[in-house]
Image (cartoon, rainbow, N blue to C red; front, side, top):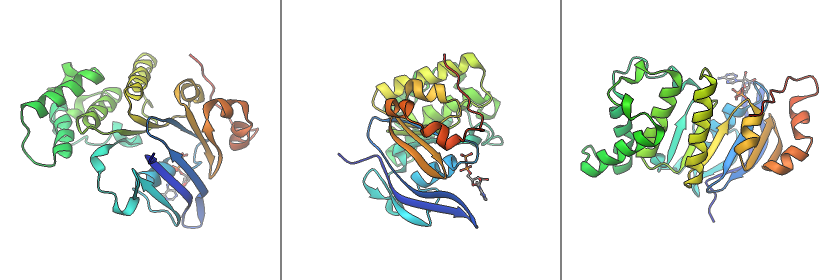
Length: 246
Ligand code: ADP
């Protein structure tokens, strides 16, 4: 079976500063990959490399079996960046318009039929923001905005969702509901890559863990990660590890 993402021997530096050193990992269809590591350990950089947003200095990346440079199925990927809570702040589109844009990405033309519009409404319903459809994106809370971007990805029928600390600034209750939504999307077959600083949240739901600190300290099953020393190795014995269980 073709991997959703295949990263081979990737290295990347910002100037002299190495951010990734010889990182290799694969994400299989249906995986829920938790990407963890201390602050500044290269998580966002690795995600950008995986999605073709940053070109590595060495190594190769394939997305859905295509070399990332030639990848032309962007509608299959939903990416909610760390800045998603602040982006579009001047964009006067409504939530419904934003989600329909996902549908445009899928059908590849500029006119939506009734079925397309229905798919967009279903996506709003799935993420629980149908009641916000007529609000402008820039009037939503951070958590509501994350859901709007996920709905847009669902409307484009993305089968890979990549999220970079999606619940920063989201209250505890909304956060739990958000993670239940991710669980159900993953159960429906969507592959998920999640950067999250709360390790308990990750080990509770991810089937695979990538633990990095410039180098990859673990890539594999969550169970074998929990039993390994990768966490203390990657974080260092003096590092603060957020360990929060529900
Ligand atoms: P994480 O997501 O784990 O916090 P990042 O991938 O954002 O880590 O950053 C990895 C390292 O690269 C950090 O030391 C960070 O300061 C540095 N870095 C990130 N982006 C840039 C940039 N645009 N220019 C220079 N250094 C950067």
